[in-house]
Length: 326
Image 1 (cartoon, rainbow, N blue to C red):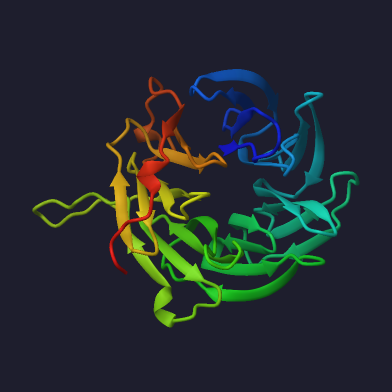
Image 2 (image 1 turned 90 degrees about the vertical axis):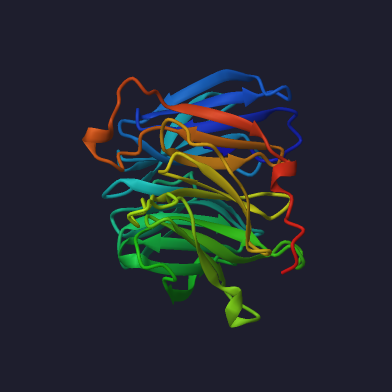
């Protein structure tokens, strides 16, 4: 799920990609009412979506090995990318001297497309399948199978900046870049979530080695026998105003955190299904999260009577930073 960027358009739109091969668009009104606007389709599950910075186009990545660009004004979608395997991530990059779309695939490549030509303007070989990625110009982070993490700098043209040893011991599920609140909002690090109910906060250039840390989340409180259920962290979103973060997990809950005070701000009640995706609107007063079965418990855990849902929650004050001293 992704909200449209803050532009001079009066309306806010929400895009959701689904395993039913469809991408849907709703207008989200100030009252919280949603109005279905349009939809497009792929020939395989849709794994990721992103917006152009001007809010006129949507980019979609699919298991059908393609990515598409959907022009919302004309309601036309055209193919803009091709891979040899499903496309797991898609991001719009707006640099001062170029714009392009970055796609990461299970074919172990990262490709960059200018949307007008059928061939990529750049292809970077990855050590393994792309599992997660994020872009905040001038930084991109890609997490792959085998727990590899690669940081790219995007100035002039995309180039590898550094590889880092994963701070987590289990498979990566999501990576989300955060901005420095003091230093004109430059990207300074990222949060990485794994399938083992843990998030790492990692600064690319920490002023103090202790700035990088990990914390446990999306776990049951344990039973007298000492058994604890541990769930995957499925998505991480940073609040656009406060810089605090939300995590959603296969334990059917969301949590809000303050990484600077290292405290939890809130945990939700359990929903009836895993939470698979989340995002904030640009003003930071709406938290969106999706619930649907993520197959984390195999086919035995599938209940066809439970339908996927998207929820919107009014949230601005809940994500204010903690007043605790750090």
